[in-house]
Image 1 (cartoon, rainbow, N blue to C red):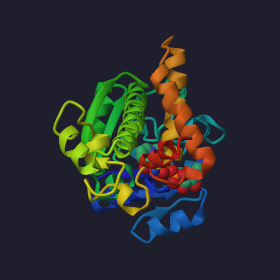
Image 2: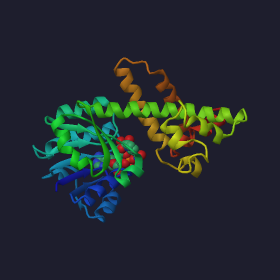
Image 3: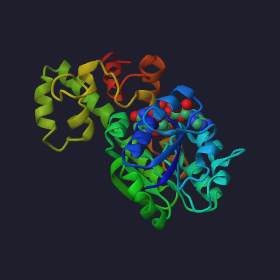
Image 4: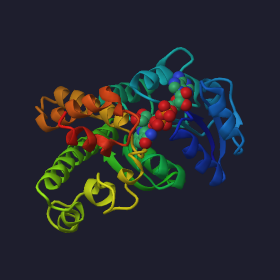
Length: 293
Ligand code: NAD
């Protein structure tokens, strides 16, 4: 069993650290919020007084932080993890961040470093069923698999450093645009007298089927577990979707791609978040579309 330094115990990280404990690993944790540390310590983790202390003597060091700025600072800043961790430790970041920072941190680490963002949300983190999209050295990915499989059930090696972030941003750009157009279709059907259930019964089994429609249908009824049945309590928040769409636009721009549909999705989610929808599930975008805003 490994000794794992885990930094960032928010809505995702706390569950992920607990699943590592359940798998029998020794987990040493740090977060700038003491209550977050206390809650994981109550599940059996050891507390460290800094991120560098959590990394000291660890076989594996994992960060799960809000954005690129915090990830760069944690790894490369003063007392950063790249220097504080053992030379042979397995290093990885599971946050969703911009591709450029992921590549910068991996290059500056000076040894194998994995970007391993996740999909599956808080429920997936708790259940240990996350999907990991991993960028980096193949040998390091093989070493990481037993660790990642304690937190998730699908692990895809996407390519070199940054490839995991590219996969994550492409996925969420497709998901956001699909949810927006699915919501437009349901509102259109409502106005034209087509029952939502009938639209669902046809489209969920025809060429319009998608995860957005089949698993996260934006109207109550057809999919009892979708957020629409609980006034759009998240799930995956619109604020996080906006963040990922912004990162996707940046990545598209850097690659010389004019991603117009992705840009439109970003504009829609921007408006939804600015009008107070940030804490709602991202499928709540239908309420803004229904209001014609
Ligand atoms: P969160 O804001 O709940 O948690 C982030 C944690 O990092 C907080 O506890 C915060 O105190 C801590 N932190 C911030 N700066 C720190 C530092 N310098 N040192 C130590 N700890 C620090 O975020 P989350 O929902 O857990 O998401 C984490 C990452 O996972 C984000 O990049 C997010 O985009 C991504 N993600 C989230 C979801 C989701 O559904 N919440 C799904 C997939 C991916």
